[in-house]
Length: 140
Ligand SMILES: Cc1cc2nc3c(=O)[nH]c(=O)nc-3n(C[C@H](O)[C@H](O)[C@H](O)COP(=O)(O)O)c2cc1C
Image (cartoon, rainbow, N blue to C red; front, side, top):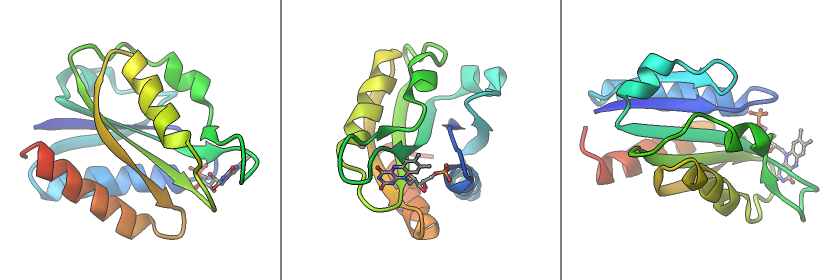
């Protein structure tokens, strides 16, 4: 399997998560690269069977949560025919932001298999969990 992790990150947590996800997938035999949404590796995207899209939770901490810079995600390259998984890093409460991210990635044409939220102080555990779940549904 070939995978690409495309992330939007303001202060680095989501980028760290993306790099860990690509690294962990790599050790499981999946070819994976991580790149920022502002500098997508188009060759890797074209080769990818699975696209993992990560962002952070933006909002007022208890209300109005949405994926950070969701406009960029809404305008990302078309993902028709690709399977996708999404994740969000957050501080306190992600609200309904994960569903919004999932809907936005679906709107690019991907089949979204699922997603998780990862608390920013549990990046290691969250990314390990995400990779386990990915390998549970998409064999390496
Ligand atoms: C402007 C702003 C708004 C935020 N709003 C929320 C929020 O509503 N709920 C929450 O749990 N975290 C919120 N956070 C925390 C971020 O989602 C969290 O720190 C995330 O891991 C940041 O990812 P990054 O380091 O990749 O930018 C907010 C952060 C910023 C900068």
